[in-house]
Amino acid sequence: MSSSKPSPDLRLYEKLLMLFPGYKGYKEKELIRETDRVVRDELYRKLKKSVSDLRGFYSLVVSSSGSTPVSDRVEKLIYRLDSLAEKTRHAPYGYKPLFHAFKIDENVLDKILEHDLNMGVTVEELNKTTSNKPSSILEAEKFLADVEKLVEKYESLLEERDRVLSGIVG
Image (tube, rainbow, N blue to C red; front, top):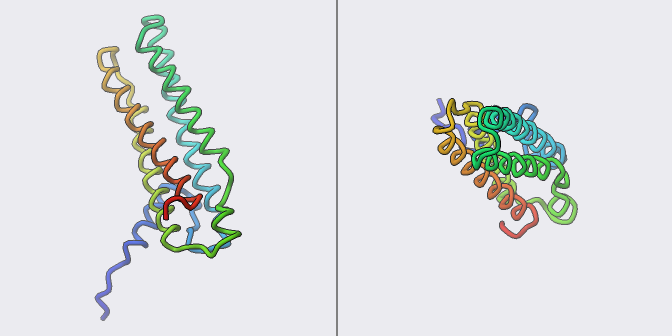
């Protein structure tokens, strides 16, 4: 009997399959562009869910207190998150610089795979956070701080992923 352990890449791949239905894998060169579309469409859908959650919270705040610093903060978060969702959705599909001009570097693809997982986990955390709206304005500060932290993390991951794809990192 062989005592070989499952490779860490397989576990990473399995995690991606759980986060992104239809994930086919970056290892197959001909599927890279389609896989990118699947990942970004799912990220977009989940980001829009958080936008919707925040809109519900905004309505609650405005209906109970009118325009306040909290409602202004929520409104800014809604616009910021909606903008991130659109940026995620409308980025050019696939990895033309990697796919067409160069041989695909497995290390770069592994970095992309890792970024997809980190982005997916971050969006899942964001969905969980925005789903649990505070029951009072007093709890809003921590709620908004948690949402802002996750939005900043996602922004950073998206920017870093763009750098990886354009060959700046690699």
